[in-house]
Structure formats: C-alpha cells, structure tokens
Length: 65
Length: 130
Image 1 (cartoon, chains in turn orange, purple):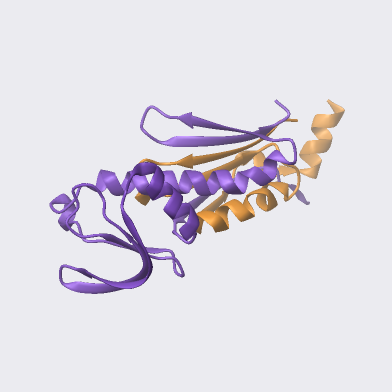
Image 2: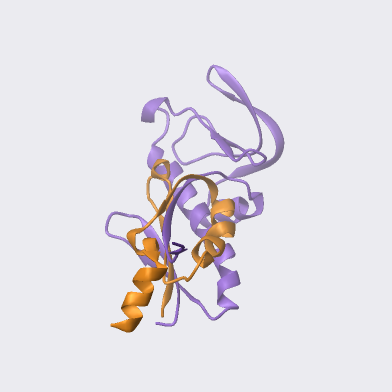
C-alpha cells in the first residue's frame, strides 16, 4: 500500500502548516510525522481522519469479502 | 474493540527555532539580516531576540527569538511594510525545514516532491510505494 505524507505550507503563515498522512498502519502515521511537527512549530490541532477509525472487526469483514 | 490507526491530519503553528535554516532562507531571498543576541526598537516597544532581518519596504526589522520561536514585528497593519514579504520568508523557511526533516524519509525509500498550488501554497509530498 502506498504511503503519503503531505505537508501543506500556506502562503499566509498565520493559517498554519498542515501535515496529513495516509496509508500508514497502526500508530505509524503519528510516529512518522512527530519530528516534522516539532521542527515546524507547535501542534494546534490533531485530528484522526475517517480512514483512521477502522476497527479490527471492519478489517476482518473486508478481508473475508 | 481496538482501532487500526492509519491516518491523521495535524495543524502546526509556525515557530522559528532553526537559525541556520533562517540564515539560508534570507540568503536565498536576498534579505539582509543580523545574527546574535540583540534588542531592537519597534516603534513603541523594544524586543529581544537572536536574529533580525530587514524586509524590502519595511520600516522596522522583523525580530526572531529562536529559543521560543516567536516572531516580533510592527508593520502598523501594512502601513510600515507589506505583510506579503513576511509571508514569503516564513513560507520559504517552513519549506526548507520540512525538506530537511523529510530527508530522513529518503533513506527509507520515500521520494519528495514540491508542488506549487494555484493559491500560492506549496505542498511537499513525501511518498513511497506509488
């Protein structure tokens, strides 16, 4: 599965840098961006995406389909 | 039931803590700067920092305290300096900082690509397994 980290650096710095991960398993997405977040400044908002809320049961259902 | 965590979105307020990247940024943009501990008068107040730079058309310098990452300036809501000049510097600094951190991913087989957006934002895409 492809892995992405997208770092959006706005023209207007007051909007804040956005870091988005996709395709990482487990807590890998958080670990992957830790250093980036610290280097760029202070995290003001951290949100799990819908993709993140897979449960083991949902995974099992997908695998058996 | 355990979650299988596979992605998230974080927003980061910019703090300038890496003076060497800031110096390279100013050099690349042709902006004069002063490095080292200093006190700078910004109209009514004096601020302390360890870096300052003079943006094109700005009356007062921009002062950075790299210990806190705080940026101090007084452009009187644009009358004493176009804020776009500051945005340019901070965008370039953030981009260079992100690229430096992202270089760790290259060792793991990731590729890095800059993508300029129509609205002026720049997106750094770090990817693997495309």
